[in-house]
Length: 87
Image (cartoon, rainbow, N blue to C red; front, top):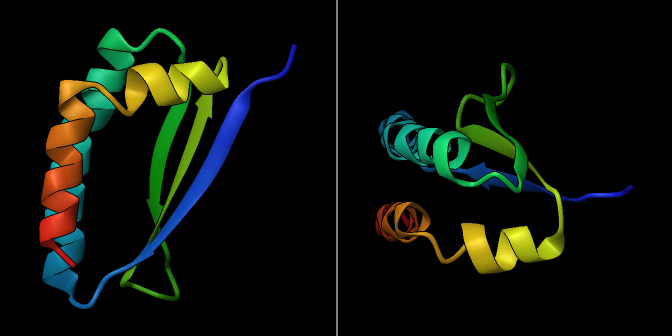
């Protein structure tokens, strides 16, 4: 059986923005683990060579688990608002 996955790459302007991103991302990741049973993997890493770059790997049981569950969850919507504020 397959799965739906995506890789999100973000580059921030300042180290403070990276920290703010991580602070906003951690509660979302916790929410995913506790409430989104179709979320198989949700991981974030910072680049060693590019300190302002962050990568998120997401893997879902189905595309619907991503679109209809994850992207509409209250935790994601709150995270998205915080991420938009960093632009």
